Every structure is written in structure tokens, then in C-alpha cells.
Length: 185
Image 1 (cartoon, helix red, strand yellow):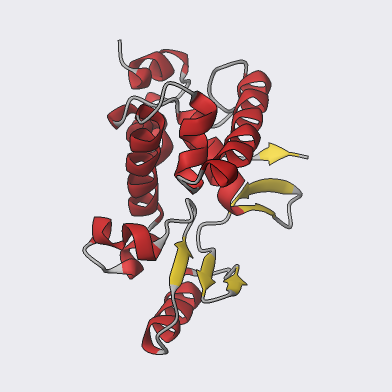
Image 2 (image 1 turned 90 degrees about the vertical axis):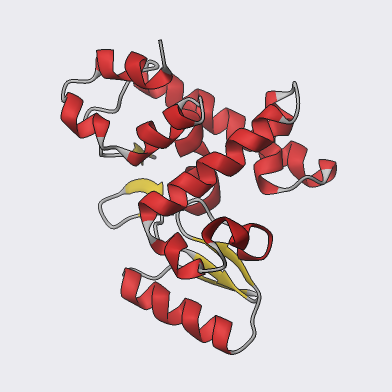
């Protein structure tokens, strides 16, 4: 039984979960959707005006500056300006995809990474490769961030703790609404 099938069994609204990019991409790469979501929270978590903490879909790091645009249009503008001025685009979108290292995954078109579904697809691909590269889950999670051990291990520890917390909060199942990916702090 696939990860997706297990989640569908618990879902109250099958159609909603069937189109959920966290669930779909996690299943494609044989990952737990909560693990994938935990990486997004580790990378781009933001406290929103409603008091919930969720990943930020349009976060960017252009050169040495971090941005949290509220709209896709604003993120596209910032990204284009950064590229035009020759800045390094190191982190893009909800999964904070490194444009320098992983831009090839979108044929160099970093604007594509501002599409949340595409960003989650690429992030799931990177995470699956990282996790499968080692027998240690902490190291694998850390390699999503960096393959340098001194950077990977602390990141992996944080990501694993966040995952275990989410798993406990959701009792290993779905969020109350499949498309509402939030955690109250």
C-alpha cells in the first residue's frame, strides 16, 4: 500500500487530498507528507496574521537579502530584478530551492519555482535523494539543506524534531482539512 493510499484511508474528503501537492509529491517519492511539510516549515515558516505558522510560498533570497513577498507578482518582480542585476538566487519558494545548485531541475527558469506545486515537486525530489543517500534520517534530512556534515546535522535535528511534533499533533493522520497546512504556536 502506498503512502498516498494510507492517507486516503484516513481522509474525510478524498478529492481534496487527491489534488493536495504535499500528499501527491510525497507519495511519488515514497516520503511521508508530514516529513515533506516539515522541511517546508523548517525552510520558510512564517507567522501569518491569523496567528498560524505556515510555510511562505514566495520567500526568496536574492544575493544577501531575504524577502517574504505577499504576492506571486511581487516575488516574480524581485526574482527578475535579482537575475537582471546578476545577483545569486540562492533560495526560492515554499521549499526554498537553491537556484544555483538546483536551477537545472526547472531548466534554469527560476520563475517556475514560484509555482507552489512545482516548488513542492522539486523539493520532494531533492528530499528523496538526500534521505536515500544515507542510512541516517537526521543526516538525510540535513542534506536537504547542505551536504556539509557540520551544517547538515543540526538542520536534520531541527527538521526531525519538527516532523515528530507534527506527527504527534496530527496523530499520524491528516490535518483537520487536508489543504490547511498550519500549526498553531
